[in-house]
Image (cartoon, rainbow, N blue to C red; front, top):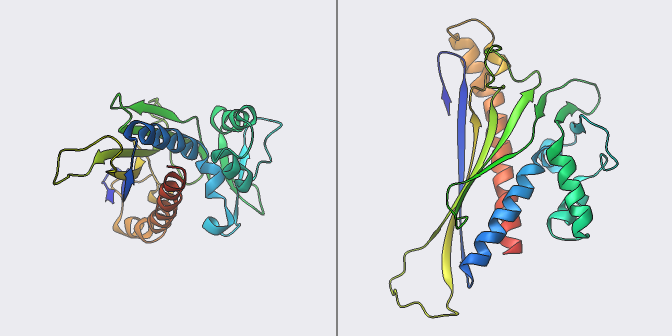
Length: 236
């Protein structure tokens, strides 16, 4: 957790997962495909009852015939429970419009997310990064209005490596142990509203942020990593 004097906040969390597999290329393709889908559906996941106890809802900013999709239905789509055509339609809804998180019982924009951006750092898909831009909401403060930096972003990434083997004479059909690390980060010019406009940030405001919003973020990311890795393990 990093919090500088200009009021920007950067937080990181990690989870490491190990698994044996027979086909490395197929496993990497699966991890990349599942990871992108679940990151695109992050706003739907965030309002799930087991995560935020039913206090939040996700509202797309544009009308769509698929706006009332529940997390349970989205999970079926992730696991191939419906046709590819309908699955793609749901993903297009989640990624092509702004998704806004609001309290369930009154109208207030807490955080709004834009379209997911993807960048592969390795041609074999052993490393991939996803960026979910924060486009608004009362929890984010836009200090740099003259710059096109947005209001920060959530960044998700994974990296897959083959575990070291004592015997390098691997035969066709042998199992290979893959080590996958999942990482999430909030930052890229993210200014918490709790920090306020005054600079430098006072110690009281810093403590307030670190003991409230920062703790909630750590909890949410811990739950998301478990969902992310669990989905990959079930499908691989």
